[in-house]
Image (cartoon, rainbow, N blue to C red; front, side, top):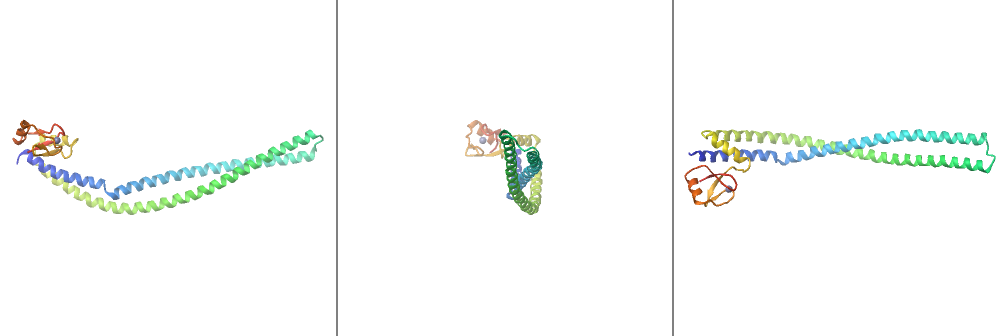
Length: 233
Ligand SMILES: [Zn+2]
């Protein structure tokens, strides 16, 4: 067996192992797990957002309560002042009315805001519950799938280990220079070797001039000028 023959046999084993590694990465179970993980993270994020909003609302409610009680006190003080110092002129009457109107408007504004915040809080409570339920369901699904995937991964990894070991075995007798060439071509072209097919590169179908064909047939190391693959005759 020539070095190129050995390398060709190694490539077959190496490609098989790579295909298994690829299958492990592309496993539908793994893809679904990754999606579920992202989804669960998103749910956690939105839960955090809602919790922050609820906290901000509860702070706002405290502020509103204080403001309402202050306006109430001001209204009572105004009523007492009207009793203690009844207005004596139409100007004073108008001033009292204006003051009372303003306090009433303020109170009504606060009241409306309290209603809005309460309604919003109810909506958020519901959203929080929905998100929590969805998160629990997703987590259950994730855990279940995780068990299945771990089993699948274990089985496939064992196969992969065997394939890698078989490929390693095929390296025996190959000179380091050839292996280095193979590895370096693999960075840009997979598989790194191609057969000569009808005078063309089996990797990219480019034709070779007769001088190159002669070199290939003589078993020399020839790389395709187009795709860079090592050509075996
Ligand atoms: Zn080529």
